[in-house]
Amino acid sequence: MSGNEAGTGSASPRGGGMFDSLITRFVNLLLAAAAAITFLLGFLVVADVGGRVLFNSPVKGTPEIVSMSIVIVCFLIGAQAVRSGSMISTDVVVHMFGKPGHDFAALLSGVLGTAFFGLIVWGSFEPALHSWTSSEFEGEGALRVPVWPARFVVMFGSALITLIYVGQAVSSAKDLFRRRSP
Image (tube, rainbow, N blue to C red; front, side, top):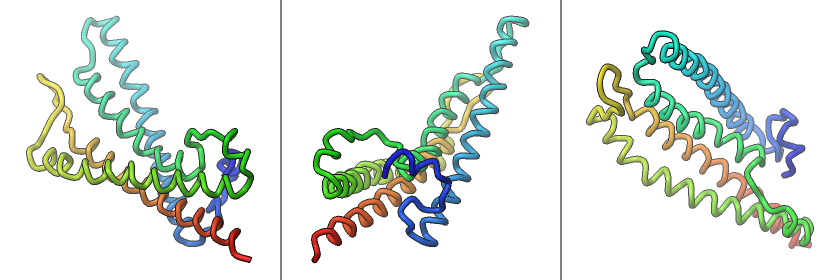
């Protein structure tokens, strides 16, 4: 899928039906949440800098909140990057082999993306559960920030990305095998 298709706003870049439409709506909801978090972080950072400069009293917990929020925002927008085809790719090599090369590269990308983000889901389940049950916090002093929201967003964001990569791999495999059949 080219970068031009990403910004069309259609329900599904590949025309996959109701499931893709549902995924697209959910991904757009996550994008809105990431935008809201980023917008609010801007106010927090301005308040922290202003408090530090003007009153010699920064907003407590700002570094911890910002660091957790950056992780959350990255995994909230990751699904959109994969779904829209905005991940980094080497089009020069792929275009040398035409449509079959593009389909094979998309299949390989789907398989490798599924494996990578599937491993993240698998590896983050126990730490997310532990951070919830043990009330794990980041920071010390007046404001301690809970870690579990970031850990669960990493896990669920990676699960959604895995699901999108599985759909990409299946769709690319269909395209590749359809091309081979007479």
